[in-house]
Image 1: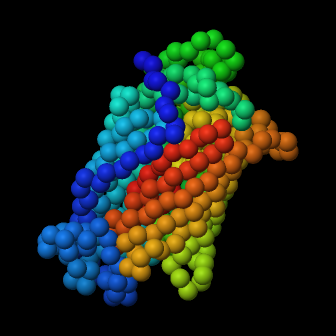
Image 2: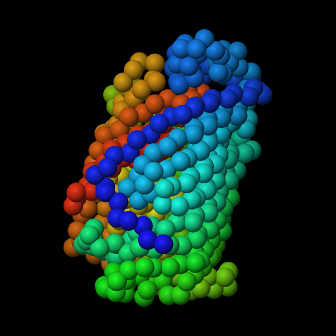
Image 3: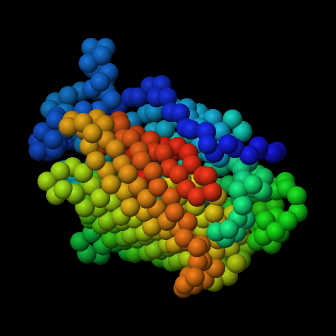
Length: 406
């Protein structure tokens, strides 16, 4: 099936059809946190005022640590899917009275006008007073789309039309070794099947076929993970550092088609600016490096290939692909309304796709943009993120998320 080339000058329209915030009390919460929430407003508070109906209980009457559930049916438009219908859910909760870390489960379903559909279930759960951290990522895609070949100089005028089914399964168990520092062991599976490509023969097609032979590929293996995380709220961080290093050897003994190895180094840093405000300067470095072997084309690093498909705002997912990805982004988040219902962001990012990680001469691909934040749930501090990004060669479009981009 062919997918017509999408006019990337078109803009994304998000219509919030319904927004539900559900709070299920269980364990007494901390009064200081309750007092802070009481000064904030979210979508449910607006509906309360407009329709004189209580969509959730007042924070001061809460007796529990959750779960706090946000359900968002929405329609939209993106650069590589056309019109989308989505049901996006976020469930957040604390697992103990200390409320040191908030756990989160995202379960989302999507369907697009090009008959693409995909389902995701992403979880970060803290147990044993945050000493045990379970990180999971399960996805299924049926996804006719486009790719443009390898490297930074690929033209936007000649995309490859591809179609595939995809199952992703990542599960990592982290154990706290010392304060905020975790050691983890994980299992990672990327399985593509029913892979089809429909395009005229050329360098882009040759690159795809040479790296993705046949109609399926399996990358499977264990991973060793080092994690440092002292953020108080991973959903909407206002301070702290997140650093993750993952060494992933894909091995035939675990069912992988080939032996190949990758290294992921990701660092995020959040600073309040000014210090006495709720405004945040956020810094992000994401580096996906192929250490050895030959990964399948569909498992290569690239824009939008991170766990949350958030790298490269300003470009469609898959617009740039290579053997290595070096990515950096800076975002400034600021409040527009004092009660926190509306906020804004300004961001810039840049990526490089060197053939070798240490290669010094490689093209830098920049992008930037602005965004709006709408508070969906003040108890978990969950925002709806609506961003407009623009890059080189005329690339531009809207992007949306349940929660912050990073």
